[in-house]
Length: 188
Image 1 (cartoon, rainbow, N blue to C red):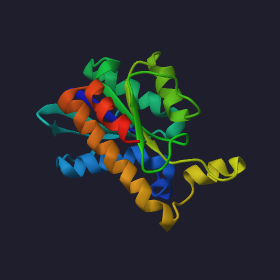
Image 2: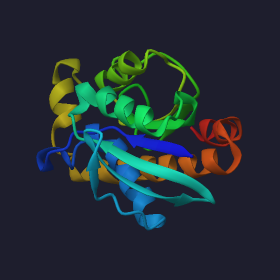
Image 3: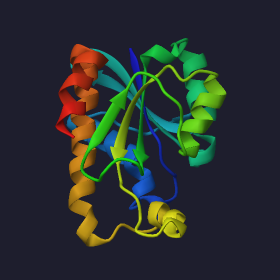
């Protein structure tokens, strides 16, 4: 079983922001595999289903980004799943829009949601799919860039990135992280 976690912020005001790329990928997976994300527990919204013959849980933490790890820790403890069976999906300013990067381990970088997951799980050893959102022209505009509305001209590239991330998650489930990394990290 895999627990697939998309990081984001729960309020409607944040639904169309770069910081919610993780939620967007979860929504795409849910639509494609007809998984209803309607259950509320573990400080999150989640749904159970099957992707490529594997049982999965899709989770969208509702704690706000900086406390995402609390939700992840609760669900892992409840299902007695180790961190090797989770996939965390999130936005990354250091990756170009329309592209993704995957990994099996690594530090959280500047991403507060991933910092929270690393802190709560006390490990960096979990699969991750990072959706590129790029960097604003002026570094001082970073907060507005990440949590502000996405301009129409940027939506197509971000849509491409979330679609790639969805396909990457499916490939991890189908053939494992190493094959998925070889296939998707080379595209970028």
